Amino acid sequence: MSGESASNMSGVYVVIAAYNEEAVIADVLSDLGRIAPNTVVVDDGSSDGTYEAACGVSRWTLRHSVNRGQGASLQTGIEFALRQGAEYIVTFDADGQHRPEDIPRLIEPLRSGEYDIALGSRFLGSAINLPSSRRLMLRLAVLFTRMVSGLRITDAHNGLRAMTRRAASQVDLRLDRMAHASELLDIIGRMKLPYCEIPVEIRYTDYSKQKGQRLSNAPRILFHYLLGRAMR
Image (cartoon, rainbow, N blue to C red; front, side, top):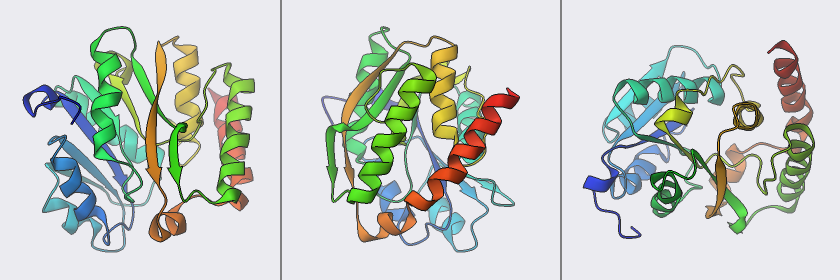
């Protein structure tokens, strides 16, 4: 746990957007509980038993009555965590790709007061079994994000990130679906929030690869992002 005790993590809230993750959500939450006990799962209108499975393990489980998308779910979870008094908020994927052990490493630079946002980077760390097609899509996303936002980042669409309460209070994700990842980076640049990148490990399993974004979805995500950006 990188020297972190349970008491040191009491102010850390982990927000998880979950959609049809019944097969893995309980295991993901059990692993998380060893590191960060304050978990907030937002079931995004799942049609399976995700909500029931999460209720048995997560400290808090919220539910959207209809599927709204990951961006909307994260915004719901962030707002809830702030109301509970969270000092730091971590976003964490529901499909088992992320390691709980990376959370203390994300929180550490925020505790120092130097940064408000810590972005996980698989390209500074490691991406186990990352398909070549997805690697290409992620590299293109990094290039596009650098051009549009001006942020010198190495990983544009990593769902593992941490933010201080001050930064989280300024996050207002309006793009409900996957374009929210680029929108968040826009917010960092626009609000001039001090940020850093932290090496993390992403583990691609058969399950997570099936659930993840495909290269064919990239034009739709780009369209939603550009449309949302124009309407801000």
